[in-house]
Image 1: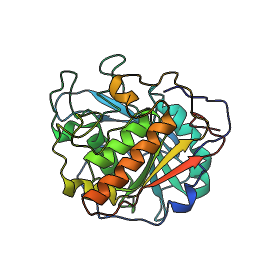
Image 2: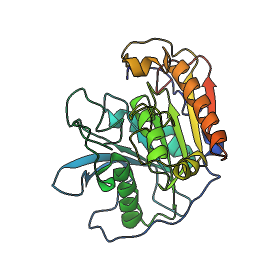
Image 3: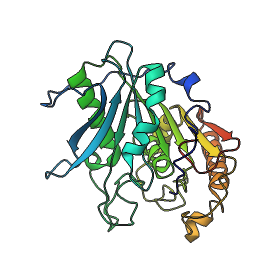
Image 4: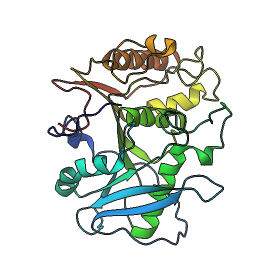
Length: 290
């Protein structure tokens, strides 16, 4: 989605730092992968995008110092411009101050102007045929984390993930469809539209034609997600204007509020706890930096 790049940092400091160290989940299986450790500073690596074929995507990293026992990992998911390096550089100051390895995957478009391959997680293809889980874009993030752990002797068994705009769509859908992911904290900032936990509405706007069960939703709802909405994110430029999208609201902030309310109601219906948090960021528009 539309982004303003020449402003001060946005949403990165708005309620994020104080929650980044408190949650740790599980362990990650180690598999031998013949790749080099990442370098200090900015580095570029590549990984296979799918379980078959040789198509690769780049992922960019920023490491302030050497990897040590306190190094944590933050994935940063780009917007619809797919400008991963810009997002990576926006997090350098945070990484320097907090000993974080920043990872910014870059999902190049499979079909120009389409969202099925990134925002929707590549759960299905352009013909709406469902893909194998190992080919989901969400699974690619998990494989990158596994590769980083193997090649850099990371102690961290989980990671945080931040997504803005199209990246926020990616993040909230990843929690819905891959609750077993090694995510300890997730941040979805200024998503343009959502997949509601509503089995009466067809995917990608709802869960009607998916295999997501109440049990799976319960696991998703007890992962730590922060839904960040800009108080001034009211423009509809570059905002999806389909019939189903407009049913979610006319602005990003309206859609975000309605999504969160739907999640609260769904959690109550299935008798589970929702530990997600909605936060309105004052004086913030549709930006990933401020």
